[in-house]
Length: 266
Ligand code: URA
Image 1 (cartoon, rainbow, N blue to C red):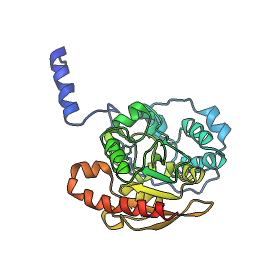
Image 2: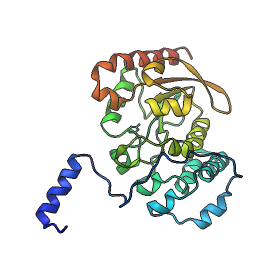
Image 3: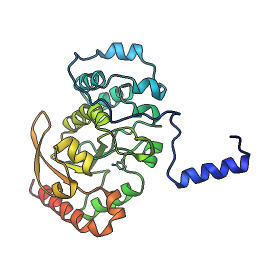
């Protein structure tokens, strides 16, 4: 089919309106296939760096066996002694296919020495463009929610995501992608060493706290083992959900008050 310039522009505008914002591949991929089974020995860091170029086409990156990718992630994360080293390790990691379609690594924002660490799901379009978590509409709501309990990201809160790369078209991350990236966020929590972990949204709560059903699990204090010590953890509703369901803000407000009370008790 050949299109003149005006029709092509109209078609692209229509795609954008329908939410089709990524051009990926001619053939579909089953991203849910083959959950990782971490049974093989870790892949050494120098080998990966030497064998894999910095940016790879989607099809090649997706072909990295998920179990090798998860094991390699674990080894890289374990070897990082500081948050800066962890960021560098993530930037060089080629095992997650999301990296190939993302514009930027979205590692963290806020104060790593803050008492509260917030972990969201994954970057959206704005975060991907800017390279920082929660800078779009949901981020602005998150900042207002934090301000309501006297917290700012500059001073009191460290913010990251379960996944540091944007899933194309903001789709939900696959279990495989989560499993591959999990060692990095777990190590990031360990290195930041917050007193309180706040998981925002279902995937973060499920990935880090092992709970499913965010409406049922939100607002309950749990224990999270950072590897160094046990800390308090709580799941709450995602601001993107609250933007769609403003009446649910009352539940989020309860969670925020619980976080404030826990901080005041330290
Ligand atoms: N939603 C998230 O979960 N994280 C972000 O960084 C932005 C939106």
